[in-house]
Length: 408
Image (tube, rainbow, N blue to C red; front, side, top):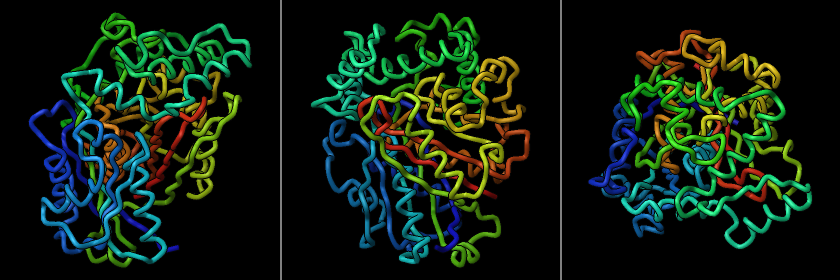
């Protein structure tokens, strides 16, 4: 397997962009990535394009890559349309890395996009709700509750109609961690405050305003312990990277960012809440990169809700479980902390255009490792960065999960 590098990265501002179509979104990110790399489109030998729900949201169900890239003059090359729920663009990067590391191509494009916002919120919620087993998903959860004798109901009557079904799922898992490790709703509110503080420093973030603890706590109940400001917004946006072999990268830049590990995994049906997709795939990522959890300097976590930050850190072995409250109270995850987390603002502040999220995380880590993140630069001079990007639910497990470990 050949060494593989990222030589260019770009992303568009995340937010509500009713005036922009999917061609506009893709063009914005790809042009920025090409400009960042200092190369022309003709260098690209293949393209991997991730998106989750453009068919439901815009009607463009098929050939998304060909439609969006040809509009900016990129055509003829092999193009791969990748759908893996919220892990779509990180899955596209995994395929791009695989092809380059195997010697099939020397320079390729990976891009993710999503146009998820609609004035009819139900349309967006219904699109999000397809990232689970439509036929058996809720029935499986009911069987799970009965099997374990749980009285804590997972889905509320509002799930899928007035809010995403995933908010109830996240809340269910979060309550379990509260019982186990002494975490409180206020702890999660502190994480949200930190995320919005970082997002205020990010010109590409959906929300660019700092918030107080009281504002988060009183921002409206979603599903206990989640409040509105702890949940990611419905966003539009795109992100892209240029991926090259070591030899090709040497012709382009003297500061490549190396992909030390690119690992993708899928969920399984079961009833063990401790056997999570994050744990299983995370271990494989650390092994592939030849590092330990303690070697990571900065990490972007899939925080569709703020509690996901600390939960993922626990499951990855980065944060000792019973130290979780301390990590939050003492600011370990801040820009100047021992383990900066979601320096971009994370999904909760940066936004969550689902098909673009994975590569937007990579974009952030690339800038952190280059030292070009500006006001939100982590203060520990990061050399190794990691992204965790999940998509969908299979039974009680995640459906898709991608980890990328990058090194400067």
